[in-house]
Picture 1 (cartoon, protein in one colour):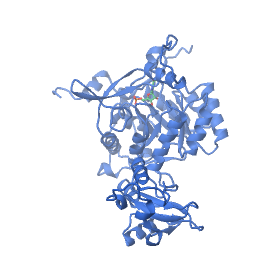
Picture 2: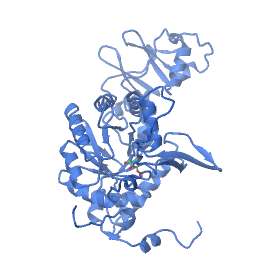
Picture 3: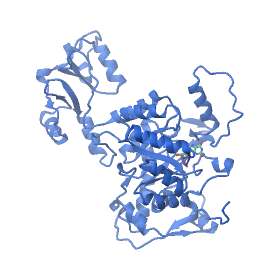
Length: 480
Ligand code: XMP
């Protein structure tokens, strides 16, 4: 045992000291940040890979707002891959594999396809994938006979506006404008359908200029994997579905299992962007980086649903953990993600000022309209479930998935939960939460005179405060 006992601090223990600022408006600060070595985000917010926080709806909204969602892994490979696909298909400059229909199909079938995929048009193609027409939902609005065939009601090829593959977005905008059409099929040199550009996607792009997107204009999304079992297969399937970043996520990331899994992933998928965690020390950070991590996730026990520190006696207060890990990661130029324990926007400021590049958030995003699960009304108030991924409920569900058909008894005697489950108040749209989180961060940056997050970190001076300082910081002497 080491004789010297260090003091560890967390967000509530400190405040940032204000500094001279020439920033006139908080809109003038730049919140962009590195998620990993090669992925940059418009806002430094990552949603937690928890089954009560991130599935496709959360990931889509976050990416549209400049952050990123990490799809949880407490599902089958197929279910997780589908979630990733839904995000990647939700918008793009060019839909590379649009849903299509054959000219001999019925209007009824077309209606089903349009409804099932929430789309408004279908290119009509023959057996050789050559475009023969376009069917839009407007074409069948007043067709009451569902047995009619598509070729009777579609707009035929000779009346369609098309463009060759390689058409740029600005060229497409001009064509859509000139011809006053909403859909532009792309045709390759063999006269086959090679993609579709829609007015709807172009408009989405201008409505959300800050969104996090890949080179094809598709929203960024990440997905979590484990370190044993089918994790390699899961990783390969996720990457094939277009996943931009994998998060190798276990409670104790400074372990042989995690390090060898990180190495294996990098060997099998050398171009993958890999986040690994969780750790809370410089040594853990170094070992994960040397195993190939492109970002390291920091946090042992700070989460809202965590009882790791209570159950095991192990952990590091989050601000100290972030600072220790940042110091090490800086030597390699690798970003740190501060994961867990963010309870208000001021905590985001403190984590980033301490050197984290981004923050991962569970609780503050749980209970929003976009988080998985239903709204529960109790005594006139609305709630949604939130639970730790090491809670009894999550463990039970994992067993149910791994042993299909299991319905009887299961012995949980050996299970020592490190998470709890409960309800959080329903918070409405995640966009509203993000406005507060990012707005608070922007103000924090302007209090320090920081134009970007690098400046913020350089200009940060922390002051440790007492219990009296904490209560002075909160609202007082007022009925709320
Ligand atoms: P917040 O505070 O944002 O934290 O809700 C989210 C993070 O908590 C971690 N997590 C757990 N930690 N037992 C733990 O000790 C658990 O059951 C558990 N489930 C989630 C995780 O790092 C998440 O991002």
